[in-house]
Every structure is written in structure tokens, then in C-alpha cells.
Length: 436
Image (tube, rainbow, N blue to C red; front, side, top):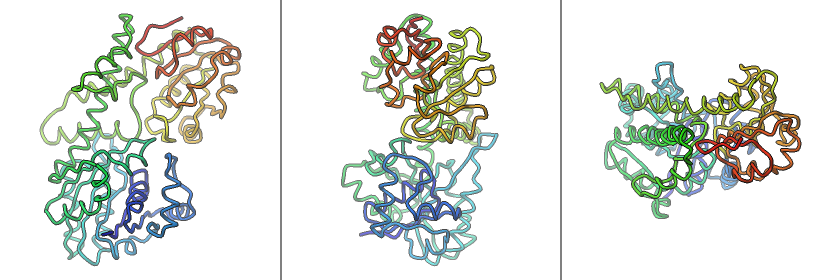
């Protein structure tokens, strides 16, 4: 039986959650205090790029199951479940800023006219539900059951992950709330999604633990790449061998410039801060961050060594988003590298299928070019920063002919080494033998 749902916050998590729940048959109202964003959504214009998102939202608006409003009172008037999907940006201490979550909880309590389940969808520190519960209790006479339902979405594939999840995690304080949440996700459970029912604290902690461990795997691969480069071994082959062990798995063992985005840096810092607040210093997490930073420094050093002097050299960065399939440049290694090169006196051009405008707005002096060949004309070095599939199809022979110096630094091992060498490039991959 369909439920009435309010989704508060229409960012990456909230908008995709709203569209997904409408798609499986529920009646959903998305809420945001940004009037311009609400007007754009009503007109079918998305505030960010994510494959399949425009189609999902516009189709569900047309179905009548999804609509948007600035008025939280309107949104919760009939809602049986209200999702909190607002941002939790990091503070300098690493602790997340929870002001937006507190503000939503306060507004929910004042707007509610009946009992409901309130769901943390934002990534929050363990024990946040206790805080939300206290805010609701002092602002409303109604009964609220606070549940934790963290998302496990991969940017670039977030719509697919949301519509067809491999797992659904719900932490709740009683059987009734668990029953409501199971009804909410019944179509996905029937389709094969594994459903984990836990207490609230376990669900809150699990999200941070998952992201911290994935960041650890990437950092391990990047540390391994440094050893492979020093020894002449091939990090891709080593990772394939490791990944064949079912206890390890191949995912997240690709060496590169390091991780970025809106989740890993923030969540790792938050998890580290939470652990210290609870009395345990999780020193391993410090090393994960250190190795991640070293991966970017290693790529920068390869470029500088290949060019000898950076001043006045034209360097083209292929990819500006932190990963393919998104226009998200938050904590993007490519932008950090661009700034390092600019600081070193280089002229830096960037190419990206989606993230160009966002990147240009964040890095002063970065010249964004739509066409890779136009950017490469007269340049001294190409650097693969984001493994967009479109870059893998570039004509290396053509690129070699228009570059001033045929240097290719492959920060993501996107190209075949033999093909790059045969095209006439000095090729510097990651964690594999260089072909100067």
C-alpha cells in the first residue's frame, strides 16, 4: 500500500530519494527552502548532473506522484514518513556541521499535525537520532519514531543504485517503525534487495564505517602503486591477483590520483572525530588520508619531472570531476592538481564532459575547453585525471601530432601502454613501469 512521504532537502541524496520513492508507487513531496531550485525542479530542470535523473524526476512529476514545495507544513500535512536529506558539511575539527539537521528537526516538530516516522537519510554521526528525538519532543506534542536509513549511492550511478539497491539498511527504535520502513521499501525487497534491520546507532555508524573502509582500500592501492613504481612491478596485475581472493575483492583497488568528492573526505574526518569523542583514537584513518595526499603529490612530481620546468608550460587535464558520470568537483583531485600546477607557474587547461563550468568557478586561472583536441593543440603535457570513457577513445596519433611535446601522464591507467608508446608518447602511468 503506497505511503505519503515528505523528503526535506533536494540535493544529491534528497532529489534522487524523492524520485525513487515516487517511481515505486509512493506519493512524495520534495521540500527545499531555495525558491529558485523549487521553480527549476517544477520546470524539469535539475540542479546537478546525474545520469538518468532528469528522466526519473520529470516522469514522476508527470505521473502526479512527485511534486515540490517550499512549504514544509504543506509537505508534512499527510506525511507518514519524513526524510531528512540536508547537508552536513565538515567543520575544521572534522566534526560535521549539524545546524541544518537541527533546523529541519525543529521545523518538522512545529509543522507536524500527527505522529510520523522521521528518517535520517543524511550521513550523520552516531547518536544523532537521540538529538533529533530531543528536538522533536520539545517542539511537538506528537509521537515521532526516529529511524536511520543511510544511502549507499555511487555518484555517476546514483539513480541506478537507488532504483535497484543491493542492500537497504534501516535502524529504528521499535517494531512499528521497522514495519513502516519495510512497507516503504517492499517493492525493492521483493526485487532482491537485502534488507538489514538494526538499532539506530548501528545503522548510523555503519555508513561512516563503509566509506572509511572503501577509502582505506583506495589508499592501499595508491600506496602499493608507489612500491610498484620503485620496483618495476605492475600495480594493475597485483590488484587483479589480490582481487581474485574473495576475502579481498577487486573493487576499489584501482590506483590513481586519490579519492575525493563530497563523501569520503568529509565522512572520514567525521568518523575520526566521532571515534575520538567516544574515547578511541582511530590512528589508521590518519594514515589513509596521508597516503591519499601522497598519491596526488606523486602525480604532480611526475609532471614536473617530465617537463623539467613548469613555468610557462601548457598542461591539459583530461577530467575535472572527482569521478566519471557526475559534474561534482567537490574535493576533486583534478582541481587540487590544477592549483598545484598553477602555483608552479604552468598554464593549465581542463576538459570535462560535464564539470567544466563548476571547475572554472572553483579554480581561478584554470582555462576550461570543451574539446580535448583543441586543448591539446600546442600543449606540452596531457594528464588523465578522471577516467571518463570518452577520453579512452581519443586518437593518440592525432594528439601526438598537435602537442608541442608528446608527454602523457596517466593518473588513472586509462590508456594501453603499448598503444601510447607506439603513437610516439613518453608515457607515465600510475604504479606501472614508465615508457619515457
